[in-house]
Length: 79
Image (cartoon, rainbow, N blue to C red; front, side, top):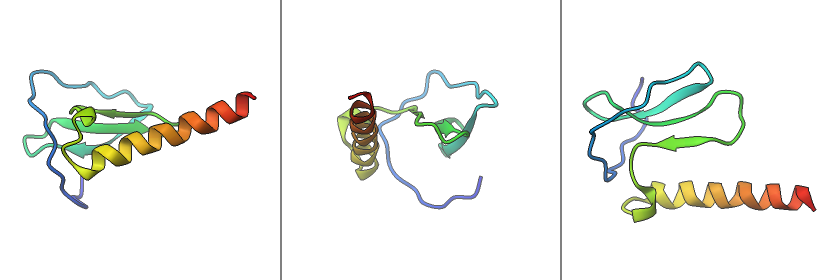
């Protein structure tokens, strides 16, 4: 994986994810552990190995804003 940018997250590894064919790796730690993944088909699904709810980095806010935007879209479509 080519490094495009780096961000600090609050992650302590004691387990890791096994990746299925439906997902692609979008972030790894320096020790090679998968830190984030997303669905390949474009459906909204993001998985992270850290705790974005702690709000340590700007990426945490971006993740929650993306989730809220998708939830609003879904809610509007159900009306």
